[in-house]
Structure formats: structure tokens, C-alpha cells
Image (cartoon, rainbow, N blue to C red; front, side, top):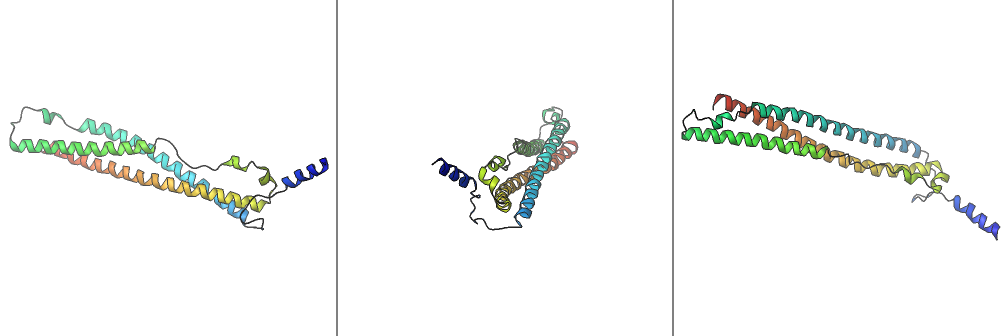
Length: 194
């Protein structure tokens, strides 16, 4: 009886990986696995570069913000030297609107960039799933196919995350550029008209 138990144990370890394609021979599986691994690494690198660009944009925004504060002239609003006329009131209201648009766009972009810099949210390959007796004993091409499936699912998720983050980054940069344009208009307006 003990002999029979030992035989079942041996048979149990010789079971190949459960694969919907069964245990057919796939000589190109190893090449596909390597290609998927390379694509997985490319996606991670793309995401890391985007993360770096967000941090650089945040630093740039910090410099721009100090220039905004330094160059905006609020003394024109508080000056009692000029007589108050209807035209002066319209000009001051227009100036305030330009300042609000400039700062509103800039703060909105800054908020978006801070949200993008919060943390890296990427799908990762679960290497602990490889620790399985069945996978250790399975044919190489079956394990390679299993890895291809795992890598491609992670790659698809990471592409979606990176594309979403890239769209948000582009939107934030557009807001920064618009706020700079409005700032230039506001600055010219304050130096030549007020």
C-alpha cells in the first residue's frame, strides 16, 4: 500500500502546466516570451520618463509662479493718484479678470501636475506566480506561453495607464502655456494701460 502512495506522488509531480492549448510543441514560444519581456520593460521605461517629465514640469511651474507674483502689479489697483472714472473702473475690472484667468489656469495646471506626481501606479508582473511545482516540471515552451499571456496582460494595462497619464500631462502643459500667454497679456496691460 505504501508503494502505491509513492507512485501517486510521483505521478502528481509530472503533471504539465494547465494550458488551454494543452501540451503541444511551440518552438517560437521562447522568442515570443523574450519579445513580450522587452515590451514590458519598454512600457515601464516610458512610464518612468513621463513621471520624470511631470516632476520637471512641476519645478518649472514653481519658477513661473514666483515670476507671476513678482511681476504682477497690484499697486495700480490700490493707487489713489488717478481719478476714478468709468473708463478707469472698466480697465481695473478687466485687469482683475486677466489676473484671475492667469492664476486660475496656472493653479488648475499645478493641481493636475501634483495629481500626476502622486505616485507610480503601474501593473507589475507577478513573479511569485512562477513559484509552482507544475511550472518547474513543465516543458519550456508551455512555460514560455504562460509568460507571454502574463506579460501581455500587464503590458495592456500599463499602456492604458501611460496613455491616460500622457493625456493628463498634455492637458496640464496646455493650461500652463495658456496661463503664460494670459500673464504676458496681463503684464503688458498693466505696464502700458494702467
